Length: 102
Image (cartoon, rainbow, N blue to C red; front, top):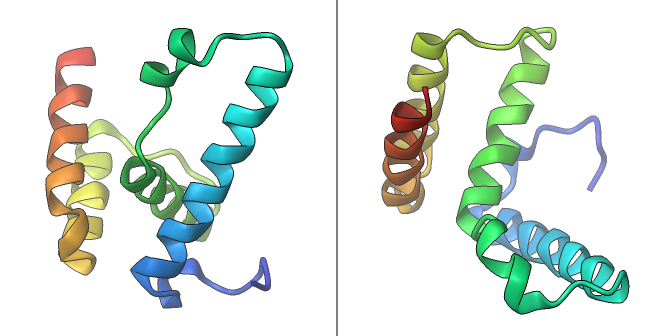
């Protein structure tokens, strides 16, 4: 995929495939580095979480790289859920975690 093209035009299946490939690369690199997968697998995001983070990063990039305030970040993630209904549960789970971390 051309890096200058928006990911939002890609189907959710394509985004999930890209996220899966990214996670497999991370797992492979960490395992080759001597880490035990049993020790780090719970630290890694799910495929859908990674898709949400990728879409969020794209929207931040589209906004000239400005990091969103907490309120704008909430709206941004909520909009991702509205744009991709299959990610709704993942977005709300992530928002719940973020609210307890802040």
